Image 1 (tube, one colour):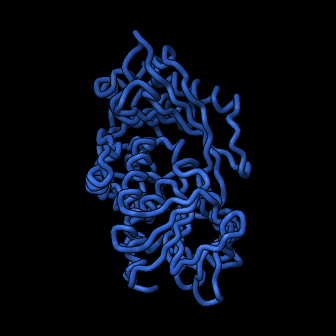
Image 2: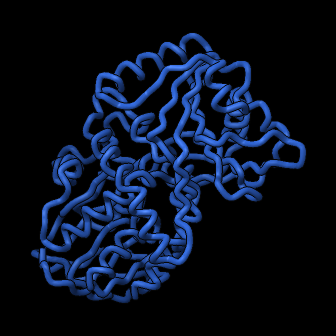
Image 3: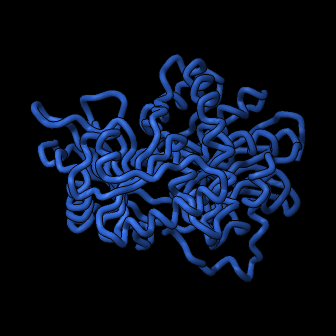
Length: 390
């Protein structure tokens, strides 16, 4: 790939696409970000957990290494973004507690704690009483769990606003038309065809269109799929107990649920999620999804029964075959993928932007990103889904 900045098109204006556009524009690229609804999609409805440790799972050590690299980048990334944007990027540096109700849930968390301890991660096992000292909002059904101080969160909507402001200030253009197809001459990209037939010339193209990325070039065909997640936003009413100060993840009779506080009160003080379903590009909010989230969240945080339900929404996470994202060169010269982040989109924003910026300079990606190379999949294997989202 050329090391001289030229014309760059970024397909997708979610958190990943905007962060890539900002990084490239700062390095001299003439950047156009194409998206019919900038700042929407999965980024708009994300919980905002930056949780490499509490999302860790045996057998996914490459994903853990990638997440740990990115979460370490978040404080500096947020500080610089806030300065560039003239607005706070929304990083909330309080950690995470993981709560369990029944004995089976506690056993699963004990196993997770043992696994993380063996990897040298900072995890503390606590009784229910000890957890309630940390977070008085937790209810009596919580019998034990973990404290993970290194897993913070970010207010996704404040982040998106800061990214858009920083992109504008960096001189990038946001074009509210969708990319329909990447154009190439067989050897390298030449541009993109937009909705309506306009062809936009480019020296490089970054595919950051989330769950829609696979349709934009054959090299990604079948490698990214939509995974639906429903979330709720709750607002504290007068007289109700305060929300927790940390992210609360929980297992309730084996079902996962999370509640992420927002630093700025008054609207959506708590984000509760997230269901998981593979129903194509369906974004309807279901009665069952809302019922299940409220039922499980209220067992862990009983005070939310007095909160107002101010939003129910669904988004489509871009899932990959092996839960690792696709970050790297793909297809013809000049084409870069930055998609397939699944549940970890917000977490992986800083490392993804750094990796794509390195590729555009003609350099190697950071070491933990190498496992996310899209070329790890062969065309014959691309149609299989593997184990998918947990």
